Length: 270
Image (cartoon, rainbow, N blue to C red; front, side):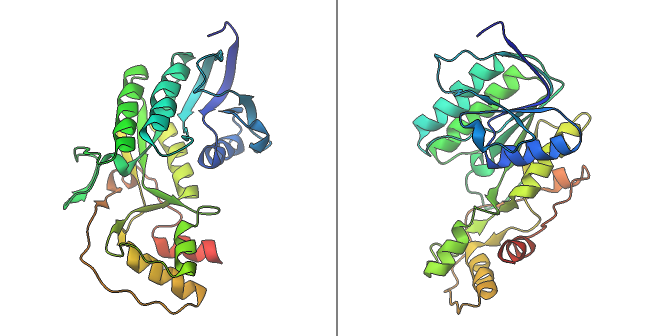
C-alpha cells in the first residue's frame, strides 16, 4: 500500500467487457470513471485507466476514495485456485485500500446456488456444487465484511456481442444436455442493472440479475437455429438444473431491455 491516492466519482475494480459497459453508462451520466485492469489500452476512451494487477502481492495499490465502487473481476481460468487468487485474495487487497465509498456493488454469479427443484430467488440458500462457485460465495462474504451496506449482484449466464458460445454450438450441430434449465442476462442489461443498484436507497444485500424467462437450453438452441435458417431436431429430455427469479430486482424499477432470450438473440443475430 502506498500514500498515493486515487480519486474519482466511480472506480471499477476489474474493467473487462461488463465493467467497461458499466463504466460507459456511468461516464454518460457525467461521472469521472477510473477502471483498474492490467491492459488499460483496451479500455474505452471515456474511462481513465490504471494498470494494476490485483493478484500480484508485490504491486502497491493506491488509496481509493470514490462515491461509487464496482468490483467486477475476471479470473484467468475457471479452476478454484485462479478464482481464489482473483476473487478472494485480489479483491481483499483492493478493498483494504478503499478509504471511502458511498455505494458499492460486487458482481458475482448465480452459480453459487447450485441445482434446485424449486424456483430459486434471493431467499434460497446457496449450495454451490463447484469449487469455483464455493470460492465466489466466500468472496461475497468477504465483500460484505469489508463494505457494510454493499450489494452483491448475482448475474446469470451472460450473453451478447462476443459472447456467442450457444450460437457456435448451433452452427456446429452440437446440442449437449438439452433439458438443462438455462438462465440468461444480456450483457447490456447486466451493466444497466449494476448502475441501477448503485443508485438505490436502502437496497437489499443481494439481488439476482437475470431475465424474465428461464428456458431449457434445447429450446434456446432451436430458436437460434431458426434465426440462422438451419434445420434443427432435438430429442426432449426431462428439465433439470435450476430456474431463477429476478422478481426482487424488477420490483425496484429495473426492467431488462431484452426480457427473454428471444429478444436478445434476435438482436444479436440481426
